[in-house]
Length: 255
Ligand code: BG6
Image: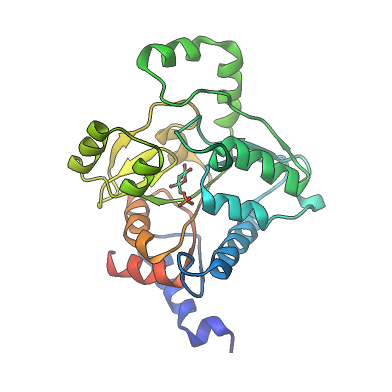
């Protein structure tokens, strides 16, 4: 038998797939928070899943983060990727350059031999700046292009961990906590029931675009993220989940 069967991972995959009516669930053994090799395995599994769903001439929107950076590492050049374009899902969210969606999109394009287009929008946009930017025809054009994405590939984070990583100020942190923020994905914060409680103001894919996207692939692992992953699954617009054993047990516990 496969190792997965011995650990009961195949059953867990089927269970989560049914719970949230997903197209595919992949669970790698171990805890990617504890083990570097499990994290690499998660990245490889994320890459394999993307390969499974990508077609010809697809626009693929990617979010940022360390997990997405691992997925990028797991990708290789092949003729399958010809004509595909990687784009960032959204504009700046306050991440370090290495972890930004723009960076991840360009690395994925380079690793696969496909092309990319970037979205140059500053982080921490105010209302006024946002509206001015939206008037710009170049920005409008790339946003329209991003909204054609057939695939969205993203990580999932614990809300407070992500808020701290993005250097969110004290006041906003309190607001997030008060609203019951538990999970974060592509700049949206979700509560335990999968309701959106906050959105970082930037441009790119809106929630309604993500809801309409044909294939939404979430890649996230680690025990501490399990509850957050369950919250994003409850949001109800994921199609594919790639996770690890430690997170999967928590997902089931919090379902
Ligand atoms: C952010 C993404 O960059 O990274 C989010 O916009 C995601 O979708 C987060 O929740 C996760 O980061 P990491 O480093 O835990 O993979």
